[in-house]
Image 1 (cartoon, rainbow, N blue to C red):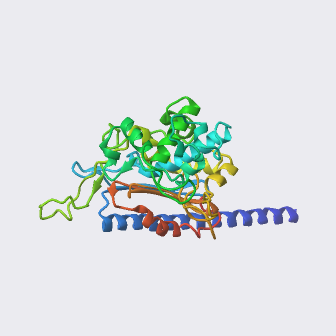
Image 2 (cartoon, rainbow, N blue to C red):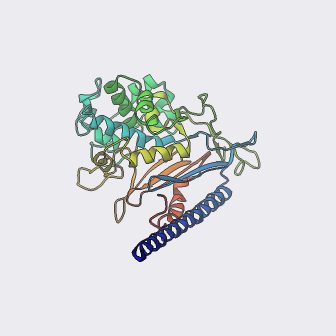
Image 3 (cartoon, rainbow, N blue to C red):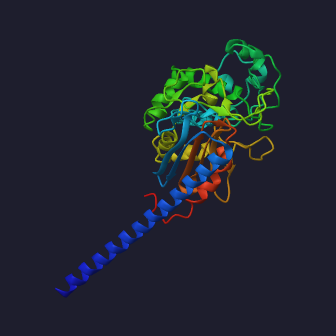
Length: 371
């Protein structure tokens, strides 16, 4: 009888300790969330960001999802969890995942020359490897200039023009960011899957990750619940408030370049996608590791990107990211099972500059937090 009482007392004590630990972990999450919200609201004030979404993932669990400010300033439309924000170049990690999926399926060899998969290439382009497109080490000329497609041309004409240009550097010689790489990757996906690029992503990434409202489009497309994009850049006007007034920011992502910058989504749906990645629902662990490994340059040093992802840091802990349009960013800290997503509707908000501050609030949470 006494032994039974001892066992019962021990069980009660253990239960109380677990409850106490869980309560402490919950309190720590609450504190981190409060600090994160305060930080983004301060950033909104300082940077004049009209609307913002944030999501935080820790140990595969969504710890924070919030929307603040206005999706549309002139009509005073509040930002909500379902407001769509453009990822711009933070779309490229999704293309990286697509290529790794095709590699897993045996449909593409990332080390193969792109001429294995694409016809009608200039001779100087034929030996470039698929992985060099993903890592921006191809040396190709850019199909986009500061005004848009080169020469203000149509997509068809722009491809003709860029293929007539000399390469900027030998393949693998240096990192050189450009949109030609991702236009070619979209063509590879379309050819190998026999479906449009956007349909492949919807089937193989959006659906399994429960990204139910994510879609493609730019500021000229009719995108339901899309945030209006703004800037406070001077427009060169004689108006006395030209240097400080807020105005609409129009941007165009041609259809053939959607793979490099066309996604419209929410912070919470990006969080679900990152969780799906971490749980192995989109890629095998070995593919994930390979995708986040910097591509080697010809001289043996690491390039700035892996397969579709900027690699911010490899040691002491890995940090990878998606960064786009100076208004959207997500950082993933795989070793800490942490991800921070911040989307805004201000060109020039540069959330990548304050995401590390937010990440610091979550790095030292108790082990039970986020579980």
